[in-house]
Length: 477
Image (cartoon, rainbow, N blue to C red; front, top):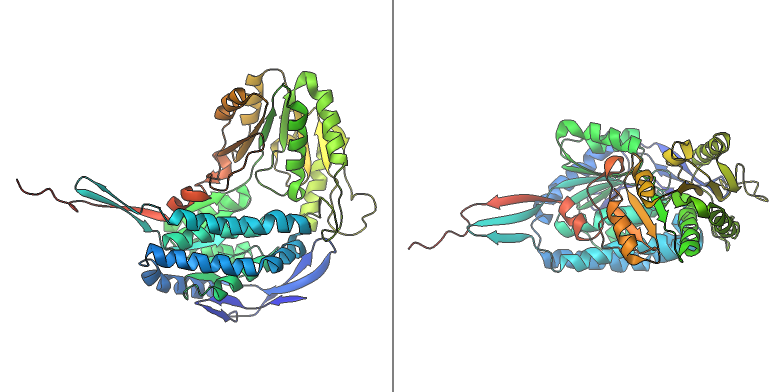
């Protein structure tokens, strides 16, 4: 049983102003796995003031000093790799293999990427007599989700450290263990006091306090669009910079060529990964109407090979994160059935043989139209909707017919045609044939958010731009 009853503020582990606790459930067993202290506005105030005090000196550190700190963080992170993987599996149900192969390495990747970019990043640029300077924005508050906890913590913390910002992190209270260990890593790495602070708590209390605090300069939030709107409203009176990575309902356009079956299979597995709990999952697959039967056959064969069960066993999928999430997914699967989509495989209820745990059947619907609920709403579970198209123009139109714009996907043996389609998808990141790149910008159009994470684009989110005129005056003639 884990007990995390302290917060990390100003380089020390401190007691909450007033101790209130919350139990954290293991979604595979539905048993309490630990408890955390729940913060208040007073705890947030202490953390923000520590970050503000530290900003004066940390913002003036050299590139070399920040590189050294990032290197120490990465080294300590690697030491705790096993602890982090165990925590992620316990708190949100990721299979052990996924935790070790993707969840924990994602955080490591962002730390290493930030260090590599920092080596050559241009913070100053002379333009004639004027010097353009990029300076750290200040104190940042980070509100992170439970689905890829370390990915989302590290992709905010790493560029903030690199650019000279100070910060307060609120990990998800649903999956807080890995975030707490991350704070232990920052302490072990000797990050200067006040540069990184961490307060556990919920959105309505700690999240709101982090969004409204007058000494916070920037709020970076990852989560649902609904919650992101509230964060933006709360931040507006302070004219803070608001960075959001929100929901998605990403199209996956499979072209009519020799790579069709491979593209369908890849798309099914991508949706099911992490039990469907990824904001950029390709949950709307668009296939040529004349090949719908073939798509159904490939999708069913692929999905039926997926095993669901104990995340510490040899299974592809673990549970979804909570009973609340499970019930939402069940309701949307039933909605798909009621609205007349073809249920190819899966459906409501737990998979056979699983009596406990928030497990969901890998579910595929076919003959979906884009007005159905399962084609409009983000399900955040292992549920795929396959839609038919008659022409490529129709596929692109339907693909873009969503309030979201986080990601898009194209599958084709014809790279030239795939590029043409990718250019027309209105989304922040479009992947051709399963390509991935940790240095590429990640973020959304429309209601999928604003701003970009990952790589050098993330650095710019944490920087203000100053112009110093007359910095290099022309010599007198």
